[in-house]
Length: 161
Image (tube, rainbow, N blue to C red):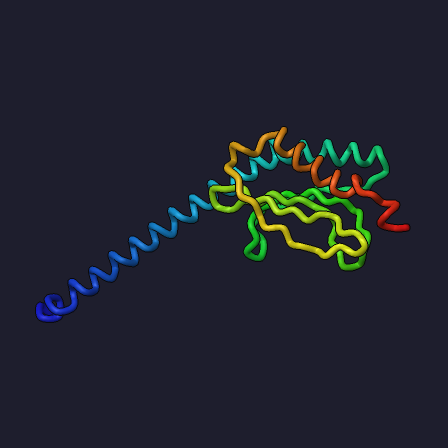
């Protein structure tokens, strides 16, 4: 038995220590991910959603349909997000204009799809990444105004005449 301990003991002990360290790192990583998810959830609930709801209410008063979709959990590998959607679509190829704020590690990812009119080619916009501190009410208002203007501030007569 002493021979086995001498031969195998250090190897097995080293392996067990590696497993223990890997489990601790995984646990720390999961805890950090959970903390980041909670931070995004708080930012979403306290800052982003109220601004989006204000715009949704205003647009409703103008008979323009829009919605706010909140996904607070990680679903199918997709991070928690909140999305503002204008239910305004002109071609069957186009998507509804929208802007989505997502948790992306320590950053906030913003993905925007704008309205596509007849003759335009859809271009996927690359996500932009911001620090949480940059996501203020004013910043969100500016982004929503820009999205809405991209839909309504067009030369419609020249497009459809």
